[in-house]
Image 1 (tube, rainbow, N blue to C red):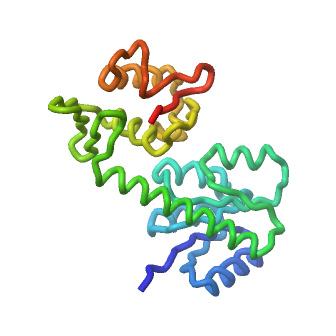
Image 2 (cartoon, rainbow, N blue to C red; image 1 turned 30 degrees about the vertical axis):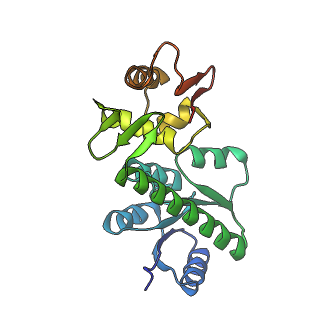
Length: 234
């Protein structure tokens, strides 16, 4: 028997909220509802959800603030913002705070269900990919990375790596050949609320290169894309 997917619906408009609840329940989802941002956080703190539908403009606590607070403790749960505004700036703010998607009211139920299915699929793929990395050793260039022991091995040599270095290696491993911006890497490793500079990332990359590169001054595994970020040459 499949586990029921649990959704938190936070919407202050009673008609919209009840319509969402009825629709989602008819599709087999387990639904909890909140009429304002404060109630949404209370429910989030008490229960585990697989998805959050979050209205932007709510009393007590805005959807932006709720999204920020949720992301401070959980970076993975999918969040879809519901907004009555169509301006690009509002969408950008929500996405920068960590929302996975947005939908502008009024919206069609079929579109909403399609977006829900899409973010849940992405979330499942990410969890499976992360789980595979955490549970199983993998190759990174000529090194075997063992996430459980925080060691990388090459032939008979074994090198200790830090938690941050392991996260960097894992992030590059799942994005082989992609140019990753510094912001992308900082958000993935340090979190969206990190307020430091990209210099911190550059220093960690420099230290990691000393452990994995034949010539750290001429890196072949993690190369620098000037003005943008880094790329793992798988």
